[in-house]
Image 1 (cartoon, helix red, strand yellow):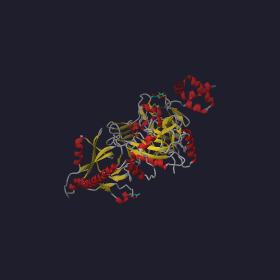
Image 2: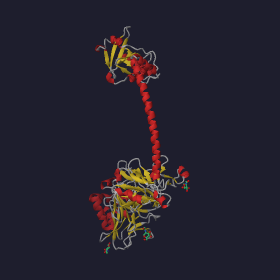
Image 3: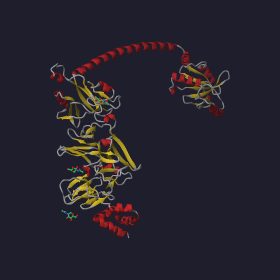
Length: 639
Ligand SMILES: *[C@@H]1O[C@H](CO)[C@@H](O)[C@H](O)[C@H]1NC(C)=O
Ligand SMILES: *[C@@H]1O[C@H](CO)[C@@H](O)[C@H](O)[C@H]1NC(C)=O
Ligand SMILES: *[C@@H]1O[C@H](CO)[C@@H](O)[C@H](O)[C@H]1NC(C)=O
């Protein structure tokens, strides 16, 4: 039974069926598939058209498709989301998210499912409807007898002459909105042939939208996105390794491009083969945005990296003539130095369309008008710049680059770039932007007067700064004198009075001051036998005052690095935290090199701990406490 169905299939597709089965399913699988075919119709579809080539006189109808050798891509009819129109397209075969990378009859959708793809008598690939009207054609002019079209495993559909293998047409030369590995965008100036991406009108309409992406090879190769044929974004010139205008791009995709300038035009390619596993591709969105996507097998979805436009300044010519765009400043547009807004009112309103104009005419312009001669023009260096559009290559070395520019009155800027050489600009400087990192230098031509203005400004600034510096220096000197005097005065006071100065400062009152001798007696000269333990800042000793009161003495070690000020702060803090139920700070001692805190001694350590914990819990104001050995101390109470 299974065999007979298989036979029917085989009849329909002749030898191609065998190729497929041998290549993809193997003999064991073949039986399995054949058995399933009786039950599940979708399997028959998969099987019947699992070929990668369509030959003369063969055709594919709306329900059939061909699959690339290796099964990465599929060619067939589809409807975009929210649309009933039928299109012939190529999409990824092995992933769960339906993703079309190429569409044939974009401009002429089929309204029903009568469409077929076939090879015409002239050897062209054609999409026909039920009435055999041509909806799309590969449009190869020379007629050939037998040709065939093969879907390659990189997603390229290639139409070839059977006998010679001559390539007549390939979909990679006529891309839609997706740029895939192995694809090349090209501009051939001699034949005026271009391979460029064109956006869809909308996600549900693959017809040609407003945006296109391609390579411009007129001067130095550069990638452009055009909107209705006008520049919308540009990459900046190619220097042989990278595009100068995209320093912020992740080097991973910045360095994978190749541009071949073969003097007939330029070719732009990307991706290394190792990438291909993640199905990387660029997509030109219907809003002119360019994203790089790759398949995340864990997420079972596309990972999308937004590339263009990065910000407002990325949009071509945002600030117009002689404007510099800096997305980090507000407003983003400013006129280059030596230039002013053409229409100040509009510019101040944030309408940059007028651009900027030169404030002081160049010397050569003035000479032409024979008004005056004056000094030679100069150049202002700007750094971290996306160089403007319309650069011209000058075939001179670095030293002569400026000289060449100066000699031509029309030259308004120049720069010398590794891998490119000397570039010069004339006319308006358009699409210049400021980067915070990366970017290139450019030298802007300005009238000498502009530099004189700057020099005058510099003199004023210098004078101001000098006067200011003298004032600051003398103030500092007198302050230092005063401080030194005060220091001497303070030194002559006893440490005790110094402490009182501090205590007054922190508004502490009535904290008794112990003297060192008293404490030495109380602790038997800080005898080790009296040592309760070692705290963070130094050892703690048990002592007994002459009046019989037991105390804990925290002797701050010199090694603790605590200065007098920090120590006093601690005293202030702890004494503020006094509470009748808690361990009390009885006083402190600052004498010679010693800094000592004296606490009430609580003999029963474990009881302390419980009591303090309970007190802290009961007291709404207590944020926590900690214990220093047997001397418990609540620190974090708010009063
Ligand atoms: C095919 O070529 C003709 C004329 O050369 C042109 O009018 C037509 O738009 C082309 N069709 C396609 C699908 O490129
Ligand atoms: C074209 O292909 C058919 C079979 O598909 C064959 O009979 C014919 O001889 C071929 N013609 C040429 C010129 O190769
Ligand atoms: C912006 O300024 C230009 C003149 O530079 C003017 O023609 C245009 O109408 C202005 N646009 C808006 C939105 O105000």
